[in-house]
Image (cartoon, rainbow, N blue to C red; front, side, top):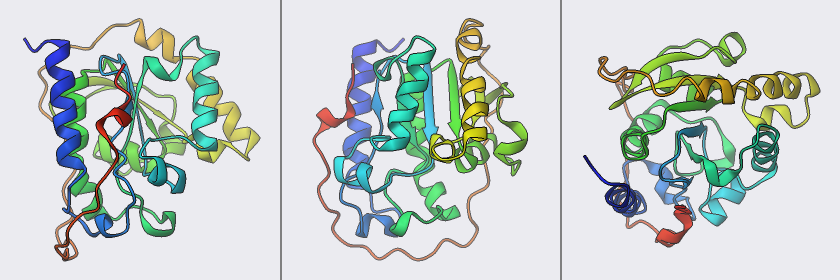
Length: 231
């Protein structure tokens, strides 16, 4: 059984590999790799879409308006950012905040699964369409399944998967914010159910069959390990 200290060191080692990743062309335009941040022993993990401009500059996920709303919603259920771990499906910002391409999601997926294995959360909240479709391995959109929890084996671990609207979608749409807040209020009762049984077969989406070619260039250096914010 791996100790908490050992898992933290392995998480830092994963970050060091991620910060020099050149698996897709996004490394050419990034300022920093946004690996993820939070509690390395978190029961609850959030997975969003991709870094934006603020995240790319700071190397930390959810530091803009959407991040502040996420922290507010956590506070309303008696939690704070330091209680959870926050990551994205992509660790590098797509140019112009465009949607992720399938081969980019596939290139980053093993890093996400590695974080899942090392943090060992009981529950994952997917934020928005891309995270939900990636981790469920199905094309069903967030508007149809938000607030519906299920047990899913994702990569190495079975978790309670709980799709939510992305906070960015709720910033200027009161009706979406109302739905997001109502779904958030159920998180404590779902966490109270405890971890699901482990051992089901992994659910992995198919990779893009024709990835775009990647030009091999020297990656820019990323932020220091302390930006992981491991509590």
